[in-house]
Image (cartoon, rainbow, N blue to C red):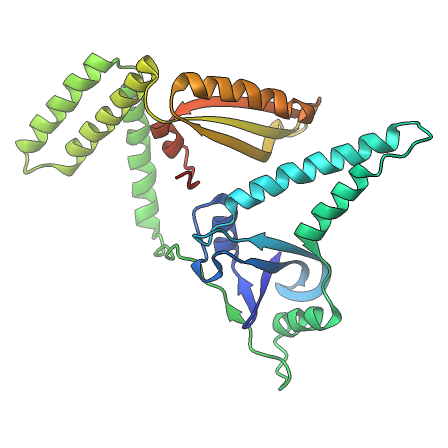
Length: 301
């Protein structure tokens, strides 16, 4: 799969790393903030590691927000896609002399807002880049940039060290997860005390910080105070592989645990229509700290 963006200043390639970051919300393109950009998703068949032929090209739009992110718009688009498709399919099964055109019109509206067809010239520009055609009339294709820096190469020595350290980190988290508020407070104090006796040892300070964070999460669950999130995941399950993939996701930011629970119940009702034998609709209520721990980068301010 190759990705291209048809920007005002010419065709640009988007790497898999940047596209993955855009889709999952941890990368952005501030240069396109507040705009809608044409994207081409190109499936290329390879022979001996080199492009042999283009088998499929899909045109879509990315709607960049004020920060140059697209994650939230993609989530909303996913829900709209499911909703309009399901409504259209249901309308086809209804036997009536009166035809309701609204499902088809809504689906066509979604298609216009999120899909586009590439012209011959646009396809030629992609082909010229794939096969490195050097023609005077073909503009140079540049690499589109995100804001997330490239990771330095991970050496085998570093990789082995990370695996070993990771095992110990899992053990630390496991211990903290089984402690109550009082025990976590005492542990954090002891960890800082030991750090101070060892030139402010960073590892002990990190353990103290992790204990503080875990204690704050427990406190928020007990009191229900602070910012909370209600979220709904629509998950498509592959029974043969015993795995699932989140097809869409919606959330609401709330000012208390109680309000988040109410929002979750309402969102469950609103999204129950997506439930089927192959698709589950799952609700979560978490405090702000757990929300960020889960890796959400949504801007809710």
